[in-house]
Length: 128
Image (cartoon, rainbow, N blue to C red; front, side, top):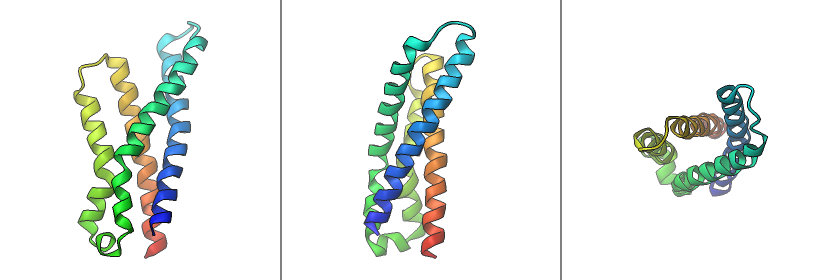
């Protein structure tokens, strides 16, 4: 079970990095209109990678769900699976940072949450 959870978590992270990078590049291209932001692409990629690493670390408590007793407790399972990402989104919305940075943080968090929810649904459907 732990292997499936770990595989799901890293797959979530990889897919989330790809989608978040694309979404952030689109966000900045719309924001900057005709300006050349080619020099910022490396910073965007590294920033999105760092944010997704933070989300990955905050989601590591799902590895406790490898225990069958904990997995069968549905409220505990939902809390362990989604709490880290939800706390990241709440924290990102309360941080005293620039508006555009906040939007990128929230966009990355929501994308990670959606991908994470997809793999949760897939995992629970497979095990049921």
